[in-house]
Image 1 (tube, protein in one colour):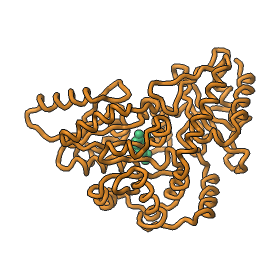
Image 2: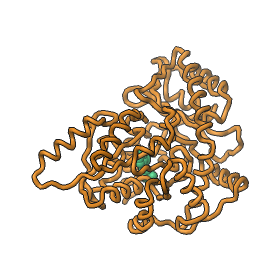
Image 3: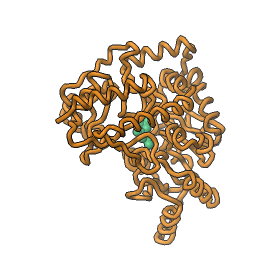
Image 4: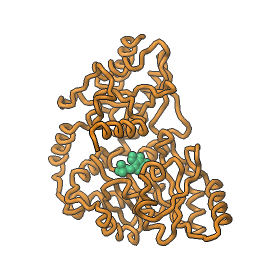
Length: 405
Ligand SMILES: Cc1ncc(COP(=O)(O)O)c(C=O)c1O
């Protein structure tokens, strides 16, 4: 691929992910200079604690490579990291045991990507059935490059277009439609729920909806898979435990890098009958990697105490949002069933790009630029615990003063 083409593809990808308007200094996202704003500065090489980045942009802490290396060294001092060998033993086994416990499932296994965890879960759960029902706006349906069709011979049937998620009635209607309308019947084996929903700004699927779909699936012999890439954040905001969520599903995938700050990786949890087949499947599809201890060590480190940190972070976020909403230039509002993403709108007198630049240059605080509707997607993550809340609020107040048009 020519470098021009790959740049264009990357731009397209970032646009689809809603990240094209990110300010300049996002080293861990590896943004190309052509899509960056001018005039912003962030030096990822400075590692002293006072310079730690606060970001209102992503799920996690956004480590630079240097910060990641340093963090791994700190982790190793606290708890010497043990290597795995092709995903067996060491930190990987520890991680798998921790996730089996957290989800209440018989077993959990490390998978190199969430995409692979989703696809292999569907494949194994569905057995010889060809149809899998998925949310229309899900990662599985829209962001996994038609892997189910292209690689696994599964036909994905989307439900709930233009809605954050489907409900039991939508599911029943879809099943009835296919049962009555197809002459040469082939089986439906699996239903997927994504929760929280990435394409709906992290909206959560109400527990009652999950329960009703789960009961229906069990009564009718369908398997149920959870794309819970961000289940930690759903649990933090809804106060429903991860093990309770997991209990309604046959298999659960959880990302290691969204909220656990690993450089990549995923966990799939479920019954031993399914999980024991995964190692072989991962190898068949080329996913068995020699050493994965670094991802496991980071994830294990951030797994410890995550509930307490998020309890604090949700409270601090409330304080920050309430203080910013007192400024006449800022309006932050909830989305329905929200987790950690809010809509932020600036008064017309404020130049949003200037504000993002000032916050980053003067205070090491990252903010997205507005989308085409003038809304800044405002994400909360653990980085707000890195500084005193007053520091963050004052940084905003001062930056707003310097960002008039
Ligand atoms: C909801 C959801 N599912 C699955 C994935 C896939 O994860 P990975 O990048 O590890 O393949 C993502 C990644 O963004 C996601 O947001």
